[in-house]
Length: 224
Length: 81
Image 1 (cartoon, helix red, strand yellow):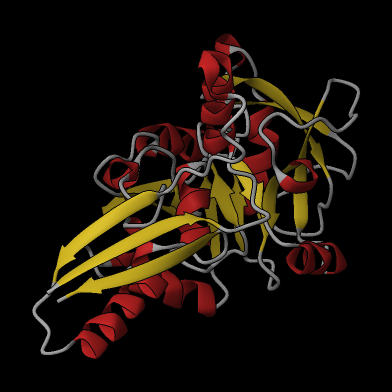
Image 2 (tube, helix red, strand yellow):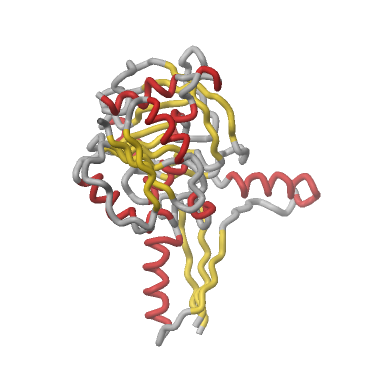
């Protein structure tokens, strides 16, 4: 059985949504407190969920990167383990240096909370393998600091290595910019293609009753 | 010994808060005199260090590791003996 570990920091608030989503897909899910120092041996995926770890003090994700559990998370990443950071989890992974770039305050200064379409830019990775390039999924976004920044040289490198996985778009797949992100970027991966980060919340798009279940197609990729 | 650290977005990284404040300053009558607004944060620390050089060195490490995100931010350290 697929084993998923969901991290929990003080201020995390999407750990149980994430647990629900992965359990629905058939995984055994364990929520792990940030003061733990090891990841269970048989773990197939670590999820760094959304929320406001440490109250977003200093910068979103800045304090979480030094939490005791993060040493084991770094080690897990170096060993090639799959890690998915959603929203605040994406911010934490960039702060920790596991993903390139940084997340800034949205250009329009608004907290954006709505369903938004995303275009699959690259499916050659465990995360999006169930989808095709160019597919459009409808996924909730909920962030204040989702404005992805990377310098010119970094962006060139992302493109060369096909690390840009998701972009914001309209229902027809035309790219749009909702928050100021460089190149309309919503999600990326690292060079080794085992660490993933995105601002939108696939774990909140799991039940048609609650609006949409497009998130299933995204998270299912990890079960292959 | 005191360290006063100013952290702000790098030049070339859009400071949307500064821009919004600038716009409002324009609308309340300061349009003629305000040419740029940047918003950052100030961190003031009491340090137990023997001399200014050591204090500056330690504060620099703190900025690099935690207090600033050097992907998007610059920092400036002033040590007051």
